[in-house]
Image 1 (cartoon, rainbow, N blue to C red):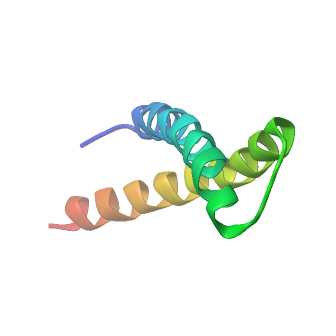
Image 2 (cartoon, rainbow, N blue to C red):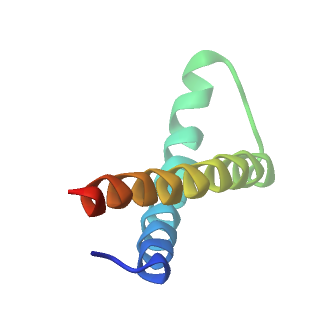
Length: 71
């Protein structure tokens, strides 16, 4: 079973990679819909979604580890 600390480390690495992919994707996709955001706005939106994603990843990992531990 994975420790809580390793769950957090995995979630952080996963989300950091996702952050940069999301910012890059936003910069490409938003203009296609007529939305134009500056680099700082894209980074801000990416940061908000990153925090949400980090919390989601950690909680889901702990939930599934708990399910596995019950067996």
